[in-house]
Amino acid sequence: MHHLEPEEVMGFFEEAYRVLRPGGMIAVADVRAEPPVAHSLNGPVDAWTETGHQGRFFPDGVLRSYLTAAGFIDVQEQWEVFTWDYPDLATMINFTRLLFGLTRATPSQMEGAIRQYLDPTFGPEGAHMGWSLLYASAVKPGRGGHKSRADG
Image (cartoon, rainbow, N blue to C red; front, top):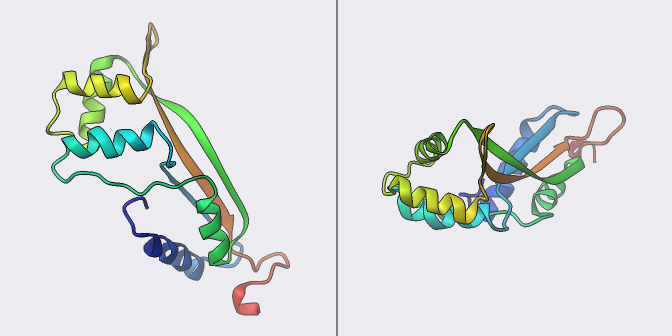
């Protein structure tokens, strides 16, 4: 969603509301508008892909606002920090290169960016790269006594 214009994001949530059955749940996840993940995507990933990358990431509370404005209830939003785990540094670099299409970066440049932005750790159990996402979920009202927009 971070590649959509703000009005397109709202349109996405309105369409999700329209197509879900009463009682249906929506769940989304995207990058939070805070460093380091957002900066890694709009920095090195932008510079080292063929197409570039300029995302509009979500500050805390914005996904909740979109879901509420679209008519959803029981809206939840949370930021989760986790790691991507690999057997070793070379696998971490190769996976990241392929995932993001980093065709313009050398392995050395990628290692430097990973170390700068994503707080990697290394040990006998493997290599771990920091990451985080903002998760949100909500329910379309109408089941179990909730009124839907169509009910008035």
